[in-house]
Each structure stands twice: as C-alpha cells, then as structure tokens.
Image 1 (spheres, helix red, strand yellow):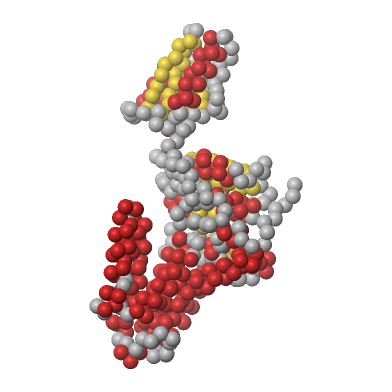
Image 2 (cartoon, one colour):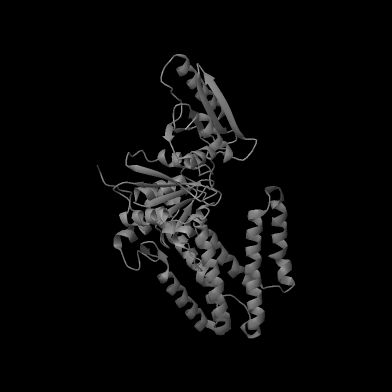
Amino acid sequence: MKLQERYDIISSQLSSSFDVVSRHLSIQGTQAWVFFISSLSDSALITRLVESFVSTVSNHLNITFYPGGVEAIQDDKKAITNLLSGQALVLLEHSDDYYCIETRHYPARSTSEPSVEKSVRGSHDGFVENVILNVGLIRRRIRDPRLVVTMNKEGVKTRTDIAYLYIDELVDVDVLQDFEHRLKMLDETEILSERNLCESLYGKTWNPYPHVRYTERPDICAIHLLQGYLIALVDNSPTAMILPTTFFEQTKQIEEYTQTTMVAIFTRVLRLIGIAFSLYLLPLWIGLLIDRIPTMLKLPMLDIHPITFGFQVILADIVVEWIRQSLIHTPSILSSIMSFIAVFVLGDMAIELGAYTSEILIMVAVSNIGNLLTPSYELSLANKVFRIFIGTLALFFGCNGFCIGVFIHMLILLSTKTIKFPYLYPFIPFSYKECKRIFVGAPIKVKKD
C-alpha cells in the first residue's frame, strides 16, 4: 500500500482537533509521515525522534528511531489506539508497518500521601492518576525479576490502560487464572475507574461489603504482592485493587509494619474493638432502652417514647453523616465555616432545643469514631449501613430485634463471595497460620530461588 493511501486511512479516522498533529518529512528522497497528540506527547522526545530519522537517513544508514521503545504493527486500528494513548505514529514509504514510538508524557500531579490512608511512620507517597508512574512506585519497592506486569486496553471508546501485577511462583494460581479469564471475556463496557472494572469483572450486587480491597498506597500493594496477592491498576485512577480480600484483611493498617510487635498488637486489638463498637454498640443500647433494661447512661427510661427516641437517634446519626460528606466536598477555604456549623448542630444549643439528648450524642459519637478507625473507607461505609439496619430492628423489637439483626448481618458476611476465600476467613474456616499473620503480624517471608 502506498504511503499516501496509508496516510489517508489514518487521517480519515481522526477528528480535526487542535492537538492532533501530522508532519511530513522528506530526507534524501525518503518520505515519511509523523502523527502525534501534542497534549499527550513529550515535545522533547518528538524532537529527538525527528533528529534520529534525519541523522540516519542523511548518513545512508538503516532508519533508527530513538530514544523510546518501537513497535511495528500492521493493524491500523491498534495503531490509532496507540496514537491516542500518546505514542508517536510513523509511516514510511516502502513499508506497510505502522511504527509506534514511546513518546508519552501524561499530565500528572506529584505523588503525595493519600488523605484517607495516612500514617505517622513509613513512606508518605501515594498513587497518582498515571498508571505508568504507579507501576514505577511498586517496582521501586520490589526489584524481583519474577514481578510480572501485564498491560491491557479495555473499553470501546475509552481504551483504558489496565495493568495487573503479580510475582510469579508466589501468586495464587486460581486467583490469577480466574482474573485473566474474566478480563479476557470482558464485554464492551467502558472502564473509567477501578470500581467500573470490579463491577464489570464480578458483577453488581446489593451487598454493601467490598469484594476487593482498595488502596492508594504503593507500600501496601508491595506487601500484598510479597504475600501472593494480585494487584490491578487502572489508568486515570489513583486507586489499586487487591485481590482477593477478606473482612479482617481490610482492617489491617500500614503502621502495623512500622511498630514493635507489642505496640502493633495493642493498636490492632483496640482498632478491632472500635470497629465492633461502630457496628453493634448503638443498636445494642437502643435495644436495652426499648426493653427498659438499665444502662450506665442516665437516660430516663420511663419517659422514652420509641418513635421520638428513634427519630432523635437517627437524626443525630444523619447529621454526623451530613457533616462527614460536606467536609469531603467543601473547599479547604470554607472548612472553618463547616466547623462553626457543626458546633451548632451537635452542641449544647441543639440539646437545649430538644433535638436530641447528650446521651444520644455520646453513643452516636463513639459509633462514628469506630467508623473512622476502620482503615478501609468502603468497609466503614458498609458497617454504617448495617448499623442503621440493626438499630432500626432494635428500635421496633428491642433486644430481640438486635439479636435478629446481628444474625442477619452474620449470614450476609458468611454468604459474601470474595473470589476464593470466605469473607470471614481465617475464622470461618479457621486457620491458625492466617490468624497469626493478621493479629500477631507474622514477618513477610517468600520462597527462595
């Protein structure tokens, strides 16, 4: 096929955008076309690419492109996909190949510690929206030649880069084969985030508990890779997916690996108690008060009206949730105003007006502190959903309703599927080795070559 015909094929499939650049080169009678996306390509690399073409042709040498990697393909659709990903596309006369040269330079923010996974000790870098940089952050920590990084493109219009990483001979073969099979059979769903990828691979569900673990920390990904897990990264998203996961795996925090054994066990036990309080403390208190069973708090049980009491508890919990969401979306310049508003809606003025009592505020505050203790943001939201559900049953049926709610909650946890392991593993089924790793913090050991 002639050079002009191949140029017309490429040009006809590209829109007339300002950043779609095509340049014609003619050196010593050798004709060529260069295509690139100016908003995704490095101008310095483009300049060196043209210089390599000029210098080799002028000296009657074989045409050499540098400095990036070069891939010769004959599929024009794949060539256009690579072009729209930021690579330069070169067409040469007397050759039917499309030469894709690595010149990508994506706009990206600098790495910083994730706001939802902060730590006092340890590294303070985090993933960004560039999948190449994210892979580099993991490779910086694991310099093992057996580390496998596989890149796929999914979606008809988005053609999003999806990278999954694992260490050969360490990864769980069943999990890897299942993931690759699902990825191969993926339909034409557009992938824009790691959540889209998870739903496309494993389907949507009404179960609020996450079936994979999400993290923005490369050190957590490195630890899980050494333990045989699989990591999936999606371009344009600063979050990684860790497969598989369990309920207790999502309660672990990076600081457990930076403290002494006794301190790590102490903080881990306190965290698990706080997570249990975030689930069951408020519903249990509601059930005791509805059944007129005395508690340590001095709420007058004879004056309790179930509807009024339930409305006050729900209102206080909803107000706390409103404040949490507003602080996430409020610009930092207005955060002081939100603190001022929180004092009014959760302070003495609200108590004096009868919106809720001080006892209700205490119990709601303790329950929400337990939510903030949960390292996994998705797990904390799921726990809050079930706390409201169990609390509603306790409000209508007292302690019996609380027991029914806990029973339903345990059934849902037991029925939750996480690719391979049961959600309550290593307790159900019981595994002493895994319990020791999760609660005592066994050292990371891998197989030797």
